[in-house]
Length: 385
Image 1 (cartoon, rainbow, N blue to C red):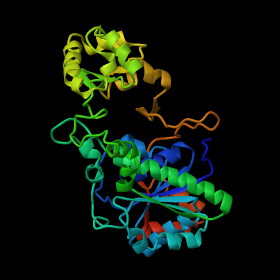
Image 2 (image 1 turned 135 degrees about the vertical axis):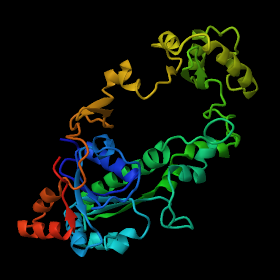
Image 3 (image 1 turned 90 degrees about the vertical axis):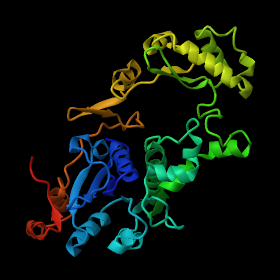
C-alpha cells in the first residue's frame, strides 16, 4: 500500500504535465481515475497502450462531455474524489460547468489542481504552445548549450521537472491542508511559471554578474572545460562534471595531466579554451568503455554518455532497481521510494474506457442507468481485446 492509499484522484485526460503528475500520484498508491474522451482528440504523440508509461496504474472511464448525461457522470465522480487534476486552457472547465466553484460546492474538501500553459493572465494565456515555447520565454532555452542555434532539450524541463512536479506538490499540500482544516482549495500552476520556478540559481548568477548571456561561456552550459562532454576514440562520449577543486584535481590525476594544468586556475576563464583543447585531445585517445573502466570508483565526476538501450543494463541502474517490468515492458521505476509504504504499480496503462462500468457501478449507478448511458453514447466502455 502506497502512502496515498485510499486517496481518489480524478485526472482529466490531457498531455504533458497532467498525465505525468497522475502517474506519480498513482505510483504513490492513489486511485487515479482518468476521464477520457469517447472520441480521439488527436493530441500528443500516439503510441500503443502498453507503451503509455505515464498511464500505468490508472483506471479509465470514457465520457462525452458534450452530452449533459456525460457531464453528470463526471460531476458525480468529482463529488466522490479527494482531488482533481486538469490541464485545459483557462476557462474550459468553467465552460463545461466543471470549474472549481461548482466542484467545491458539491465537494468542499476537494483539491482542484490546475495546470495550463501560460496561466490565466497575459496576452498568451488563451494560445496553444509546447514545452519548447515556454522554455523560449523563460530564458532557459537561451541559457542552455553551446554557441549556435538553441537545441530542444527534450520536454523534461517545462512539462515534467517544472509543471508536473509543482502540480504534484500542490496536490499533496492541498490534501494535507484539507485533512487538517476540512476545506479544499485550488492548487494552480502552469508550464511557463513552473519553468521559471526552476531557475532561481541561474537568475541569481546572472544578477551577480556571474553568468554571460552568450551560450557556451558559463560554468554549467558547456563553457567550462570541466563541465562538458568529450568525444572518445570510438565516436562515443564521456560526461565530465568536476566542478569542485578536489574533484577537478582527481580528474587531472586520472587524465595524467596534473603537471600540465594549474589546479588553482580552474575557474580562470582565460584558461578554459586551452584546458578544453587539452582534455579533448586526451579523451580522443581511448574508447568510451576504456575511459569508463579507468574512472570507475573515482570521485572525478566522469561517467559515460549512455544511449537509451544501454541505461537499463548499467550496473548502477541494475543495483538501484531503476527499472521495472510491467506487462513485459521495461520502464523507469517510481520515484521517490518509501521505506514503509513503498508500492510498485499494479498494472500498465488502461485502454480508454476500460473501467467505465466498474467505476460507475461503484458510484451507485444501476444497471438500467448504465445501459441507457452506454446506448446514448454519453459514456463508453473499452472493447474486449
